[in-house]
Image (cartoon, rainbow, N blue to C red; front, side, top):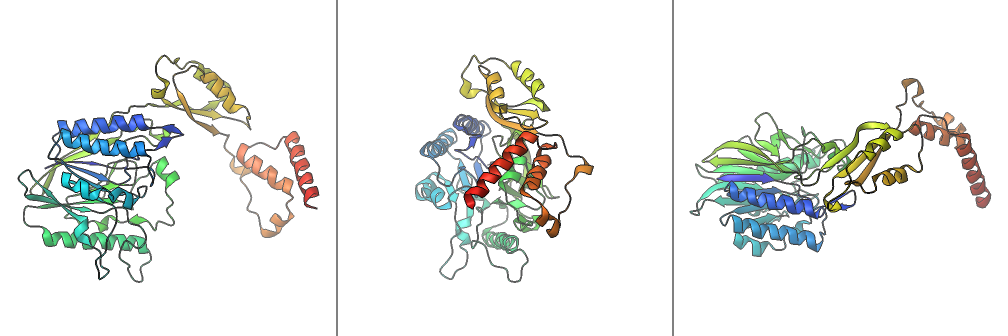
Length: 413
């Protein structure tokens, strides 16, 4: 059986307010071709199909068009999809009765039996060969929300312990179905303890004291491959090397300028895994950083002049991050940059402004309650200004601040 693992498509996402429909279309067309060329038997998608829980009609059309095209390209293809934290579990599952007749299995929610126990029958998907014989079992676990996992009494981290318990119980249930010669796969959309996160992951995820981190021990060693989503940086987890994040197919931040995005393919024969390959995804829209490191504004504007002029469709032009080193506030910064970019074959996405670092001797003092009580509003304003720009507040700006402060006090009294 040839299997392809991918995740974190985020269809419908915008990149600094630019629509990414073209990029997602290009990726899904490429994926469809790969499925056909590599004669993939099983496609597994580990969550975050959409970027929003209420995706737009065009985003949904793109998703279902891909499913149709993939099955036409590879008629015997089996597809297993789980919901991520960005997906609406109920919405993703809504066409399930129709799709299952086409060997498309979607698992979004955790269902319970009448006695309150988790319905593991729904979470364990048989994968069959062309003759209809079960060759693999897939534990298709979606992103787990509060109340969807077992409660572990007296546990320090209810989430970590509960998710680990669910995977253990799901594995034990799968073992009750498995016979000799059949392998077990697992899917998940979660944050493992040792995962290396990208800049976009850092800005998106709120990990409170590590309570959402799932240990590698949650996945039994006899699971031949665990296909994960949620972390956007592709990587292998654990010593054994059978736990993988496929990563996101599209770049999520400018820190990924030199980063290769991928899907993972592998083969399973009996209970053995082989031929694991990381297949690079072509980037349809380039990311650019000008300059490569922050420089003074005059040098930045000179560098922007050297960019090529636009002579093709600007909708496919590279996304541009302009990196500037300033000594202080520059109110007309965006206007100056946009003026220099007129007619250039780039789309301004981000202006990254840096200021000189504060020296150790200028580090902020720790304020006691008494010292804080003695500070005037102007003192606080001056401290904030210097902490950001590393220079003293200009006298003109201090005068304006005092004027506004006096007017506010007059109105209040």
